[in-house]
Image (tube, rainbow, N blue to C red; front, top):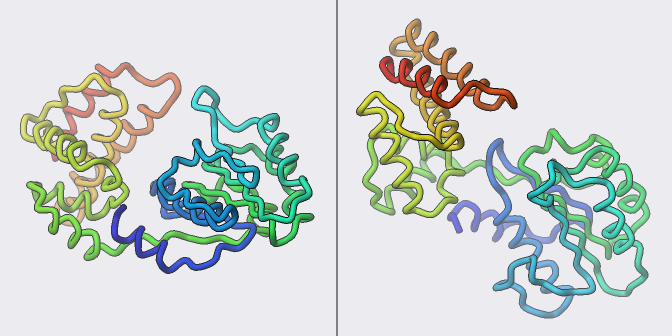
Length: 271
C-alpha cells in the first residue's frame, strides 16, 4: 500500500453509517475502500478478515455489490437483493458495500433511498466512487462524504526517489503529478515508462493496443502542458491536436488505430 493511502487509513477513525468514499479525479480508491470494509465487518463479526478478498467473505452481516464486468452498469434488478438484505431484522450491524457507485443508475439509487432514510445507525451503506459527480444529489445530501486527499508533490517524489527507479526527468515528473499510476506493480510501471521513452526517442509509436495508445496520449498531453510556458504558440497548437486525438480514441466509432498512430507520430515530431 502506498504511504499516503496508509496514512489516510490510520487517520480516518470511525465511519459514519451512511458514507460515500471518493478521491481526486482518476484516483482508484478500491484498495482503500476494501481495507475500510474489512475493518468494519471484522469488528461486526469479531473475526479477522484482513487477509480475505471481499468476494470470499461469507457473512450474514455483509453484502458486496459491484458491476458485473459483462454489463455496462449495475441495473436496478441487481439492487433488489441487497435492499432486502438491509431490511432484515437483526441485532447485529449490517454492511452493504457498493464498489463503483458511479455504475448505479438514478433509478437504482432511488430504490435505495428509502432504505437509507429508514434504517438506523446499525445499518451501514458504504459507497466508493472514482467520480463523485455521478452520484445523485439526493444520495449525497443524505450521506457523509469522506474524501481521500491527493498526496502532495514532494510526498510522491520522495517515495519515488526512495525506490531508486531508473527514470528520465520527464517520467519522474509524470509519475509525481499522477500518483495513481504508482498503484500498479513496479515492474509494470517501469516497462511502460521505458516504452514511452523509446517512442519519444524514435518519434514513432509501435503499439497495436488501444489502451496503451490512449495512455501514451495522456503522457504526451502531460509533457506538452509542461512546454506551454516556454514555447506557448507551438505547444498550444500541439496540445490541441493531442486533446483532439484523445477524444477520437474515446469515441465509440473512432478512427482506425493506424490513423490515430499517424496523427500521434506527427505530434511526436514537436514534443
